[in-house]
Picture 1 (cartoon, helix red, strand yellow):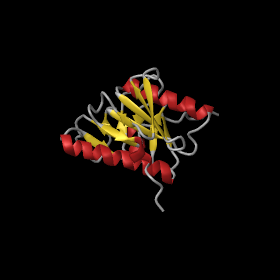
Picture 2 (tube, one colour):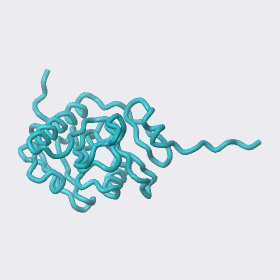
Picture 3 (cartoon, rainbow, N blue to C red):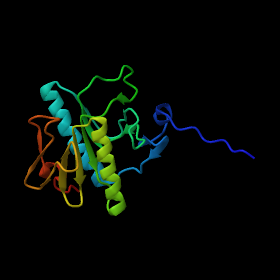
Picture 4 (tube, one colour):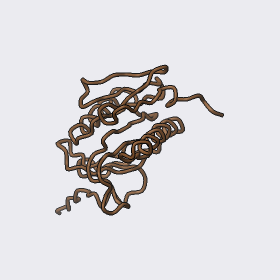
Length: 189
């Protein structure tokens, strides 16, 4: 008895998937919702990006859940869904659809399950995919350590920022910085 091989998932399948997901290796990969602190941190960064786009009239600040579709990468990845992003390209013809192309600057905020050797390998691979797609800068934001590690073009070109310092996104956002203290803020009750 022959069994049918399932067809690879497409961008249309991704578009009709509820919740946060990415298209990788012909499969729609869903992600768990973020917890309180990772969501709050991503929002703080997105708000600062929105202020920057309003000041300069350049690009788009993107919050959590936006899909970026890219040509299939060697890893099999065909999309990204960063926690926050800046995009400096044209909006999609149908503004209800995903952006065609990578974010200029992507922010990945670690959630509860983003720690440990396996998670580190997955994050390194995802950053490599971002750079292969054309993203200029990726932030790895760690709410537990309260650090922002800035990657520019590769794993080798990185810098870490902690409380009391300002993180940047050069060359994706020239002149923009964000205080690490503002990202992690004080704990509100």
